[in-house]
Length: 243
Image (cartoon, rainbow, N blue to C red):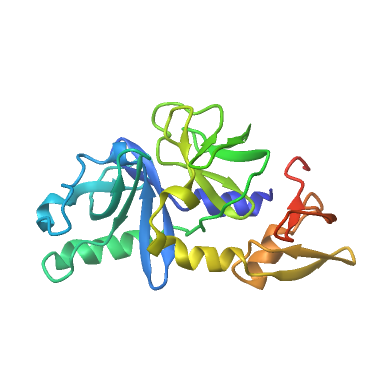
């Protein structure tokens, strides 16, 4: 994992209530992924709920700063402990929507990824990345080192965020727990294939959204792919233990 990628991933993390979240890009819109328990309350289970029932005032802010940004909950799963926040209704809350858009524009955006790496990276309360061994289930990713206040932080590997910290043994696996409409674009990105060259070698970076991102993922010699070892779908298996 390169320092540049981790720096970019950290730049996407924001404060959500008493926890955290991170910004993603979906088409021309930006959303914040967080844990459901970080919300002030869950919206009612009704597709025609009132705007005020699913809109939260002063719920977002930079890390270690005041909460001053309003957001609307567009998805919540209390069982998986995942929620998605978006811009408030600009037809009713024009100023709040403009403030939300300006806020998320100031942060980095990371991608949703999937896979079963042996290790991943978590962002500590003091803003430092640390490495953790991970285990995998159909809907969860196990890690170690989570503490209160880290809820909503992304658990990242080279392709992007594979899970979100829930401060318990079962962290939601994003590719399984997020809604299909949000994952559709990101699944297409995961299958993008780019080839870059390092020291005369061709290295495939399949979890890149662009050639520039592929080069970012592979900018140091620690990035290795064993092209002789393939998963059942034909993708190369990355050596996540390499440094």
